[in-house]
Length: 97
Image (cartoon, rainbow, N blue to C red; front, side, top):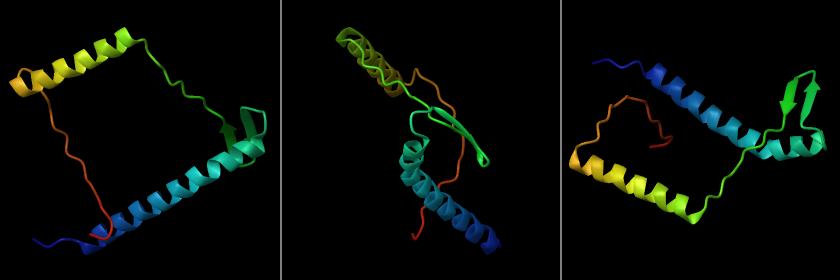
């Protein structure tokens, strides 16, 4: 079967570009937030910058235990074959392999 090498090469290039750009964005975000000062939203000629806030919940011990019990019950159902699943294919790429 003939494979189009150019498609694999372009995919790899794009994935590597995305990774590099995401790393740059992650490093730059705190600096942009400092530049924004005390405002949570700033309209610029480049677009709207908004500081989002994500809640991190801490639960009481009884809720944590119930969650752990539910996870264990799910794992048991998987092992017993009473849980069902579906598989959806997706592509994984690792650079330089």
